[in-house]
Image 1 (cartoon, rainbow, N blue to C red):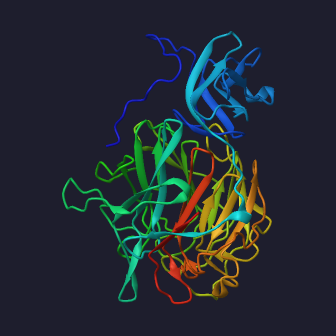
Image 2: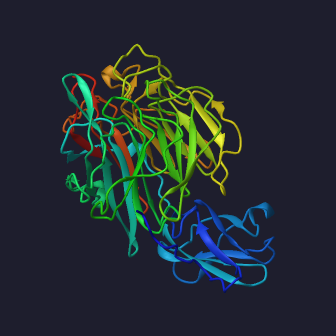
Image 3: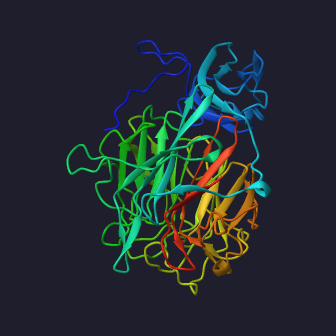
Length: 480
């Protein structure tokens, strides 16, 4: 399962020797980077101090352009911190480190332009329908460089439908191809079977988290889809982590269990950054929100190199949102009281407007200190929304909040600047999911995912959810 050999980057070592080399760039073998993005280069023999050393990228129009190294502490024998220059050529290219001794080490990177998402121009459009009408689907995007562009496939795993008044988790796994201008193709269910040819989840799951690992965002040279935690058939949170090899066209192997979470969780925040998976908050098997924070590094064989317990959140938080910025994690919104699977539709439940933040090491990926309360990041307590990370902007879509019954703030936005997340405000955009011709209703519990195009533009969609005005589940997909 997930077996693959690590491909060497830069120079190789002779027998019994450890030659200088670049191992990973931003936690990956061949990363997809964005101009102005902070980047960490990991390797061996990079030289103790910078001296005459340089970091360069291929330049637009030819030649090379130097990348900044801001401080002496940003250069060591094992790691260099830099940023992608604005003049770096878009598409596939070479990152080069020249050490103080004059040795040149190289790695392959793929650079995208830096495009700031314009919230004022946000226009939601129908992107067709999903084969079912679920809530709690786990969504993730597989991005693969293709020439100077990107090919993206969206994966959807699990979810729940309603039967006899109860939510019933499903085991289905679907994929759809992203198309130009944010459109998506038809959703195709992967092979259902009871033998070794099965390509769906071995057990039903809803309100799980999904992550995808590739050589472009991790140390794993293959491609794998992970389904983390979630609610099982009995309505209780699970600690399982299920994974399968994937391509741009299909799931190509059975899902098998990997290293379990230290505790059962559903409705958790999960973020992939620099080859690590961050799992924050969520409910336990009795529906009680938790303070747990776990970090797992994606290994060379696609397994998780252990789930490491990190500093706990200051207070319980489930069915909220979160992001990992350059060197800081931020969690916001959610519920702190016991809830049914998915969070329910009780308007009387108190919802969190607060946020918590903690510093994260760029190199190890572990937290370097305790969480601290942020000022109220949301204009009102809010839970069960989709979080869309668009680089410079974070969008929250749908959910339960004061005013949700009139859909007064369907989409709100916050700006990102380095390690800082500003307050959310809105509504933003020129159209709403609820309005004609979208007719999506007032969505509670939609799933969300984002991806990038070759010109640096950001795309996103939300899927499913419950219409608060009718209590009915939605089969729609809406995006921009």
